[in-house]
View 1 (tube, helix red, strand yellow):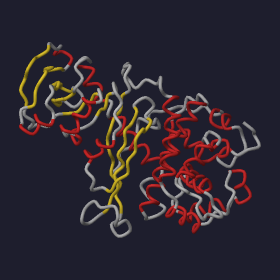
View 2: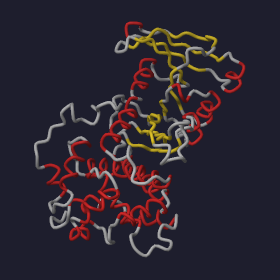
View 3: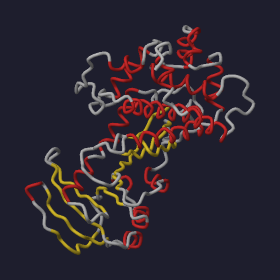
View 4: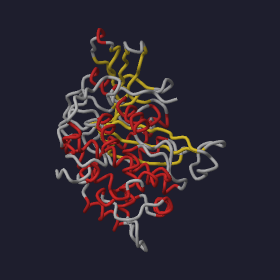
Length: 388
């Protein structure tokens, strides 16, 4: 890297600029735009994410204080609060959603060999959602309850590298189970879901696509035991059964057999019942797979702590989705840089270093590797403070 260029500019070099322009052209992002291009908008929002800017006025003040350096950051237009607000409101958010998918494809290739705690050949995904509360007066389009608004961030996480492969942003009133209709199921892959997604008709789609799911059973579901398989009860396993559903609608929606596993979790001292359509993996591996679902919860907590997705720079639906997708781009970009530069640092530490060095003109690798940083448990990206 050229030491005469800013660290921010060197960081943005890891973005595929040609693919970004393709996304802009796909949605006519520059239609009737004379100044302040989509690229300038993206760079400003990425800068805001990396430096924890609180508002549009905060972004404007910070960048104008470094007016002579903006060209070296890659920003070619004059930054103003009105320009950025108008761009966030009118530029199609799908530009940044599609660009995030481009980055995700690059990141998944880099993390394809990453371990997530279990040695399995299959790709393993965890599906979950998180709710971001909003003000009903400012965000009336985000229907949730009578007294408040909210948006839901539905995420399908590839456990190898904790890379989000599918992100769907909906009003808070949309039920989680409807996201199963949006999944493009991959044959042979394993999807870990919680009880909120238990819909037998939708789960039967997994059978058609030769994909597998692991979920927890509800306490009142009806079934008939067909076979019992031997288990080692010293491991916490209580039973491993092949069952058939007995309810009229349940049997109609899911006519095939299922596997039911009862397990006493020693950490919670709680009896858990799992359902899956995978009959080949050991029963104990199924229980360990479900524990891996915690990674998607940690992902939500991480991005809420370290990226700007709880307070928004605009109130329109387009502005909210643009900001969320930009934050996903920044998260995946940092993950890509970590792998390409072979950094032995947590994403948290990388973000903290970048937040105070973006204007410096040192090689980015030197800036990120010159100190004796230690990934202490309090700062590790798997050790997060819970939100209220």
